[in-house]
Length: 375
Image 1 (spheres, rainbow, N blue to C red):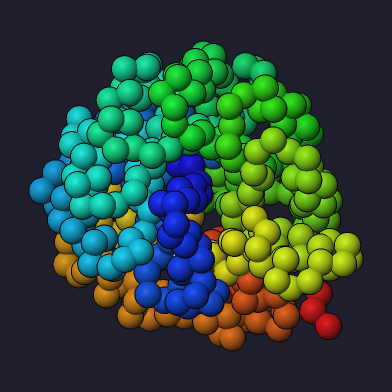
Image 2: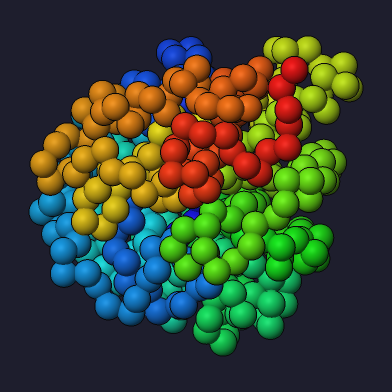
C-alpha cells in the first residue's frame, strides 16, 4: 500500500480543498476526512518485505462485492461537499476486474480518485490510459532503491525496478500527476540521496517518504532511531527549498514541528507558515483527516493502525468517522498521553498514532520516533 496523495487543486476561481477544510474546522477534521484509502483487495503479485497487508497472490473470498463497493461510494457521498479524495489501493487494485467500473462510478458521483497500483505486468500503458479516461486523477508508484538490486530486494520480485521505470513513463504519457513513495528504514536511509537524484530526472510531482510502521511484514524490518529520523527531517527540509517536486512525510508528522522551527528561525510569521506546503498539512494524521477501508469493509484510522471502529456492511461510513469512540479520541490531542499530550505542537502534529499503537497497543500514546521533549 502507498500513502498519501493530496487532492488536486480546486477549479479556477474557487478555494482549494485545503482552504475550505481549514476554514470549516481548523486543524480538527471532524466533518469529513480529506483522504479515504480503500484497500480493494489483498491480492498482489509482489512479495514486498514491508507489506502492511501481507498480500498474497489470490483474492480474499470475503472481499466486498461490486454491489457492496458501489454502496461504499454512496457512503462517501454522504459526507457532503467538499467530498473526501479517494485512493484505490491494495494489495494491488489491478487484481480486481471491476476496478475500472468502480473508478467510473466514483467519477459519476463526483468523487475525486487516485490509484496506487503495484508495478507488475498488470500495470500496462493501456491500463493506465483506460483508468485515466474512467476518472483516475493521479497515480502513485513505489521506489525503495536507486538501482534494481536495492529496489527489487524489497519488492521480492526481479524486474520490479524496470517495470516501475516503464510505468513512470506511461503515467507521464497519459498526462497524469505522479507521486513516488519511498520506504524509510535503516536499510534505505543511506540510499535516499541517490533516489532523490534519480527522481529529479523523472516527471514527479510529489515524493512521499514513508517512515516504517512495524505492522504486517514490516515487523521484520527496523525503524530509524529518533536521532537519525530528526537528522533526516532536517535534510528533507533543506532539500525541499530547491526541489523540483513537493516532499512529504508519511507516518512522521513531526516533520511539521521541524519545519515550523526552521521557518521561525528564518523569520517567517504565522500566516506565511500556514500558507506553506507544510502548513497545508497541519493536523492531518490517522483518524483526523485520514480514513481507511479494508478489503472486507472494516473501517480503521489508517492502514497502519489496525483498530476497527466498525464495518461498512453494518454501519455507515459517515457515522463511524464522525461519531465512533476511536475516531473522536484520535481527533482530540488533549487525550494523548506522555510527551505527545504535553507537546505544544500536538495540534499541528500529534505524532503517528499508528506507531504509538504498534509500540504500546495504545493509539493515544506518544510516538516513540519523535525525540522532542516539550518544555
